[in-house]
Length: 195
Image (tube, rainbow, N blue to C red; front, side, top):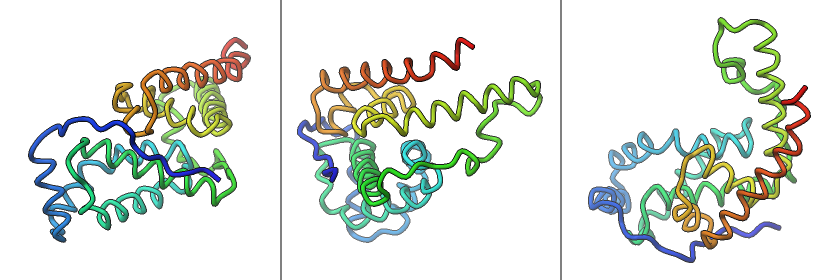
C-alpha cells in the first residue's frame, strides 16, 4: 500500500498574505476558504486530472476538504501552494490505492480536451487523439513517484526545490525520477510519434 508523502524539507513562507489567509481559514472564515478555492482549484485539478480524469473533481474536493479540516496545522514553513500540492498528492495516492490502479477510459475525456482546435483537419484531430491517449496511458503506467514528478515538473512547471518539498524527496531524487519517467514515456511513445 502506498504511504502518504510527508515533507522532509521546509521552504520559507512566500508571503504574509498567504499565512494570514490560512489563519483566517483555521478560524472558520468561509470567505477566506472560498478565496483559497478560487486561487488554487485549477492547480489542483491539473494534478488530479492526470491521476484519474474521471475522478479529478472528487479528488480536488477531497483535497480542499482536508485543507479546510487541517488549516490549523499550516505553520507557514512552506508555501500554501506546496502544502496544497502535498495534500492533493496524498489524496491521489490514497485514491489510487483504493481503486487498485484503475485507469480512466479516454472516452470519458471531453472532446474539447483532446484536440487543440475545432478547425483542425480530421487527420490531425485523429492523430491528436491518438497521441493524447498514448500519453495518458503512458502516465498511468508510470510508477507513482515518477508520474507525480513528471506531472509537477513538466505539466505544472514546479521547480525541483518545490517538488522536493511537496513529495518529501531530495532534489536529486526528483531529477532522477523525472529522467526515468521521460525515458519510459519516450520508449513507449516513440513508435507512435515516428509512424
